[in-house]
Length: 531
Image (cartoon, rainbow, N blue to C red; front, side, top):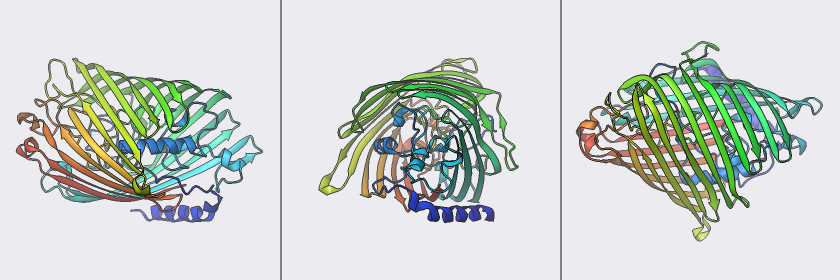
């Protein structure tokens, strides 16, 4: 790791220690959740690459805790009348910090005299203010039989540093910019993992956009234009890619209209291409464009324990060199469906269904994805306990042929680590039943457990990693792919420093063993600083 990275982390930690007392007291805030993972199919502008290291997606039961944190966050956008947890901006990573840092509005804390140093600093009276943000994440991966490959044992050390600036000129206009630095060291023979530009980059222009809005008490309309992160879709379809050192960003524009009951959004952009090393050498991939329409409606809004929202989504994605199965070429897909989320007393739900049509290199596409998650919040012996389950199904069939209709679902820019740090499978030709549980040991410490029963949806098609097929698995019969036990724990060391440990073990089923694959494990500790 470059010494400058550690110097930056030390400097930011010192600033945090100096300014921490300025934070409002909130000892009940839940630990920072796991973040989203690496996203994007292969051939998305960068050369095709193997899966990148990923922060694991949240267990379904943790989604409700995240939702409640967003509702009570003192840095949520002030002028948005729509419920923040379903407004399509970004996930909260703690009580103060969001995954996309531009979402944060520190003005309220400044007015209360509780804003820390460098947050909502007045430059010209109350008209112009500046907020600075920073993040440094250090993590290590220990892989055994990585990607189920026998003998593929190796380690990875990752580090990223992000610095952002948010300049507000009145409450109706602002400019946000962000730069990032990434390091990756490997030890061993990673047959699947590979160094990519998003993992190793000297200095990258991550985001630079302008935003204008108009708002009243129950109305918000606005436009954003430039380079930005966009996650106004389920992480099963679109993620910021928090696993690799640098997030996925887009170049285009976003329109939004929000009321207290209804919201409508439109997004159209091209992905950023990251190039290894260098300074500010990113470019725009003109061979792909993603356009999206989002419409949300609040069915019930009676507080954090009684709410229900329905969100419709339509995505039009064209990629001139998209990879599917063993083919790469023009791919034009239309993904449409809806998601129902909310909480009713002790029970939370997150249900979604999406269909895909279009064509891949002249072949018709007919595929779908369904995900059903539910949890119950209990309190045995005074210990907060959440228990739940998730059922996922994504179609397969025809992924390795070059004729007829393909039924292989394309998860577009999915959270590739949604099933764990090992990134062994994703939303392609899969069916998963996953019971899970979460225990809040203390207000700052949480333990999560999950077991995944994994099957192929179509036994005549291959079993897939997030980016390609496991070789020859289509030649062997059987639906059961294996079982995976997942454990992760989060601890808030301070309001700015977050610790995490994950351990996953996958026991491969018969057809994977017959195809030459073996059981696998990954262990990953990390520490993240946010300011």
